[in-house]
Image (cartoon, rainbow, N blue to C red; front, side, top):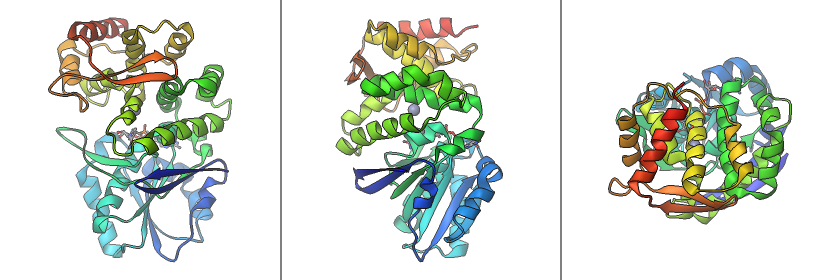
Length: 347
Ligand SMILES: NC(=O)c1ccc[n+]([C@@H]2O[C@H](COP(=O)([O-])OP(=O)(O)OC[C@H]3O[C@@H](n4cnc5c(N)ncnc54)[C@H](O)[C@@H]3O)[C@@H](O)[C@H]2O)c1
Ligand SMILES: [Zn+2]
């Protein structure tokens, strides 16, 4: 098991590898373990066995973005209230980014904040969502509108969860992996370039790639914990990606599927003449964009969280490993890119 330490506001330890679950720090207090229903069904028994020495109170939450709401949070507050969970006790999230964001939000707000532990079970959550301290729930008005910075004291990454992850979800996670490879360059880029399909098919161990992605995100986040600047590079491919995801009503496209399209756009807007980078991005499956309307997508780009006064900001690449953030682009350029994506994805 590899151990990484992050300095966020507070200290965060990440354990990666088989056996990571056993790194859970023992304390005398209880653990409110919030677990995704699918993960509970597939891995619940193993988890109960592994953690039988801890005082776990299990609470299952329904799967899916549409449950990342104040309503589900309220149901959890009721359970915590019935248990009288105290300040010194802990909340553990076991699941993908939805469960992590939701349980993290509850941990951040319950009695003004209790210690939080993340056990990511999707590739996306392992390489991205569980690291960095952002937690949130959605409102009808938008995604992640109510949230907090509440870094997990421990992140326990056990790659064996991935054996049961559906292939569509693996590819969605790999889009964030490709994003990180483009940002970091170097050995991570080479490893992803060599192993992409093998990881998607579960034929090769994803552990080294997960480690490098976490290390990269940890570095960026440590330099800019509450996103005043540099952390924005992590939004490579996300300005257009989010807009497509939103235009699809969060049901048509998974987050990573939208990001895969967004990365194509980012490379083209960067004018990057790098055949290897372009080929890598094109190896991510492109799901159909049929039925998404141009005006809607453009409206969502303008309304992006990171836009200022309706003017979107982009992350571009000067080269693989050399991102630039906060870039303004001529409106004609990025709307033409929206047209190009919608045409490519029309079948
Ligand atoms: N906080 C952050 O920094 C951050 C970063 C990126 C994304 N996010 C959030 O993460 C969420 C997306 O996360 P996600 O892609 O993990 O989706 P998810 O949590 O919805 O999980 C995807 C699906 O996989 C299932 N699942 C989870 N683990 C499994 C396993 N081991 N085997 C089989 N099935 C499994 C779940 O039940 C669900 O149906 C979004 O809400 C997004 O906003 C947060
Ligand atoms: Zn993302």
